[in-house]
Length: 281
Image 1 (cartoon, rainbow, N blue to C red):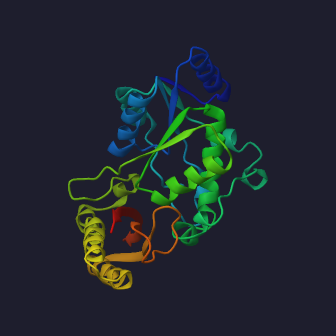
Image 2: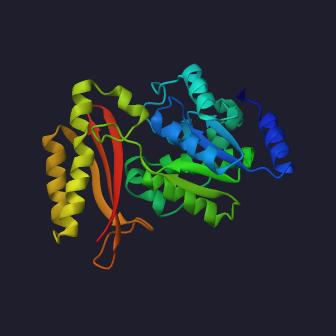
């Protein structure tokens, strides 16, 4: 696998692949890779002739007092994992390469409505940072397809909307969440948890499972959310939000919606975890 910080090298290689009629898949990451990331790479290998990955801890999507400086950097291990999974090209830019004029002078991309609720309300500017860096990475790599995990359902919807609204010729593929044996969604932030906290954190998925069954059996959404919040608090979580929304646009669920998603964000100690569960009724 080739690793480079040079935009020109990425473009030259992808251009050469495309000139031969070969397809390119792209998996953007922030590094500190776990099995969820590797699943994205392996799925990309199945769907395209060549796979490009990126590792960039994007400062634009971190707010004040968030864990930008503490976010784990594990480049050597990540390179080996990507190589083993089948990636051929890795882009590892610095903030100075991505934002040469500084973030204050950087043009940005903003996806209205979807970006302003849930995680967007809790983390103002977060999805502006996500949309901007993903748009820039897409312009650098020029992939045919790009793969993202469904663990961050809202982020996936933001990216899908951006691509559709800006007429980008890229197919966005969502890949199912990879979980630990306990049901806890795999996340780089799980490394911040003690073993006792990880054991308790499995309650997040269990709570969503219970809520989905209750709603399908006729329990009102409001009552299911109230019960779910109580279960999370009893397990030691500090809920940020627990919502049931339409899968299409994250609008408030109504009796007319048959395709629903439970979205949760909650703190276990100082670590903020997110998860979601799609279901029909």
